Length: 556
Image 1 (cartoon, rainbow, N blue to C red):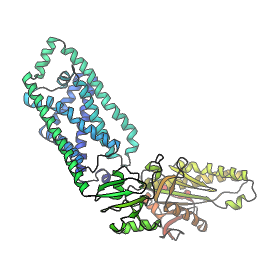
Image 2 (image 1 turned 180 degrees about the horizontal axis):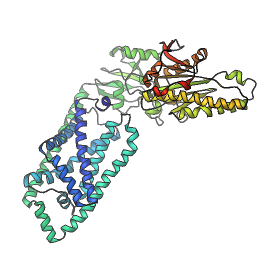
Image 3 (image 1 turned 120 degrees about the vertical axis):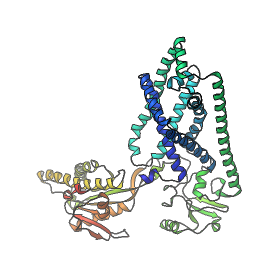
Image 4 (image 1 turned 30 degrees about the vertical axis):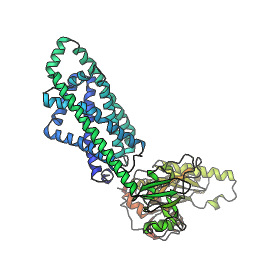
């Protein structure tokens, strides 16, 4: 978890820390405003508590340092971008972030600056009266929404890679909608009450005295400070865009020309991979592993300029050899053109709507269960096809619920057998679910065999292979008629383990890798090493005569 949350350079970490600081301030500020929905005393009481922190010298330093660091890093990131082309969510966050200072500067000047310089009592009532008669109230309401949406996008982009975030998103969306709604309701409720009081000349004089209302001259000075601060912001933004433009011009002078067969010709910065060049220029280029060199779907044939590229390293050579790639094939994610070249993309968009990345393939480490019925052919010889189908359906009706109850999904049925996968958030949970399912299947089969015996039918025996390994989950088949399935060495290992159970007289053969991942601390003295067909390395596995006896409660 820690490595996911804090990965990246120092700028990324500073942006996260400063963003979290500002998010905390905004959250409590909005909740504070929302208390106006109930009573003025609640609103002012919480504001006093917040000021005890934010108006403290240390709290002020932390808050304003976070503000300037976050804004500074945003401008810096703009200046360092290679292209302004970006995903919609990222573009929206950037635009909203740049809109915030346009209203926030005025808010800070009229509150904190007025308090420090002119000793103004900047309670919520003062702020509301200051805005209520004109469009400022709507602009500040818009600021509230902009700040909140910008913060929520940033929080989502940061936490989306964690395992728990997707489970909490539905609930957090409700909270994300509630907070600004609550704040706006409190603002409107308190605003109407305050403005009704302010309309009374006697109460108005008391309010002006209570708040130490600024003089017209003080307001002129504050307007001037606001204009100067806005000017400084525009200059900083202009400087960032100027740096971006200068760097882009410099890169063009140190660029490389790439021509795609049946595609456009582009000019890109030297130092980028060919895949990055494609993505930066909006050119469709398949890359299922995200450009990590772990698949070969981004491969290209270099038709011209191959002699100007470095020779493939060990990783690229091994990947290309695995798919028997033709001469001239390279991985786009591994080559960095420094001279003009012509490239042919071996896998391209066909003009139809492209499949989602998740449907193309998602790599996971999961438990796989391969199950087969023993003696099926001899048992059903001479039976009518309808009787065979009836028996198979009864068999699967008896055992499959034990798999699905433990979080498993039957990937496919294969005659008298099946392949199931346990798709959980992490490998440990998947391994534990697989162990429990194997034991539950064994118990379910015993109950089913008791029913068969009362009918005078012979008992059914099964063999199961259980393994944990790397899989690719994706949709296999033509677009529009594809089915989700799993592919990978783990499937082959589970199948081969199941095949060994017959000779061993065991109901289950479970790999040591799965047992270790599940934290199983039962008796492992029976572990054996197996040379499995189609598997390069020997696999250590534990034979279990009766899977129902597997002590899954020992998986810590």
